[in-house]
Image 1 (cartoon, rainbow, N blue to C red):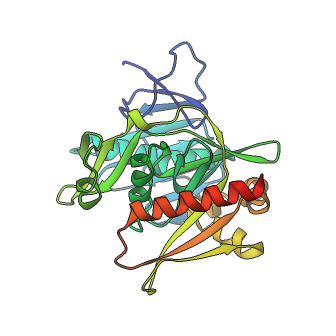
Image 2 (cartoon, rainbow, N blue to C red):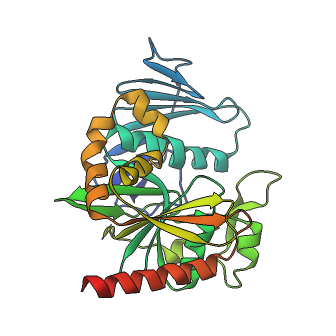
Length: 306
């Protein structure tokens, strides 16, 4: 079977499964992670936690999606996938680069935030939000301003000394049709994310940033009943609690009991990175204006710091 090699989130991945959205790596590289096709157990022996579509013991997580695949993530080093009959390859790729990769990173003690992230040329910004709030649309607005994409869904953070850094990841940008149609020179559509839904994965490889960057600011997007955009800078325990809420697949953290492993990174974020919560009206769609507002905010804060 053909092996494919990729470098993502600072890890070299050896895979039996092809990924068009992952940057390639030298086949001579020593792999940190292996992705393979194979048989996966229907359940784990004496699982510590059983949750929605998953079971967990300290060093293994079993994902059970019923319509797509069963996936076993082991020891932060191996992902084994057993596709169900009729599963779409695109759905499998989305599952592997999402839930499975998030679980593997957590097993390795690496912090993934549920956030898009962009490099502006001066700073690296993480844009956190729950699904459907607009973080990908905001990331696309930054790309239209000449910025570069670090990742659309996972912002992977490691510490160098006491400074948080972001490692680049996938080169796909997933947008609803209105966000695509407003982008006159958008990247080519790669595939439809869900049959019957007007959400598409775009090939953003020309916009992908290829090296790690220090994280400078975090913005939390949240829909509210306000009639205009509101902002609030978070501090203290509220900042830390909010960051914890935006860990990618936080239920896996609790299942594995890995809160203590992630705490130093979370604490460094809380102490050193400004976190601003942005309250968006329910029908808000002016993401180009919001990207400009954030850019002005960024320049103002940079000038004050220097």
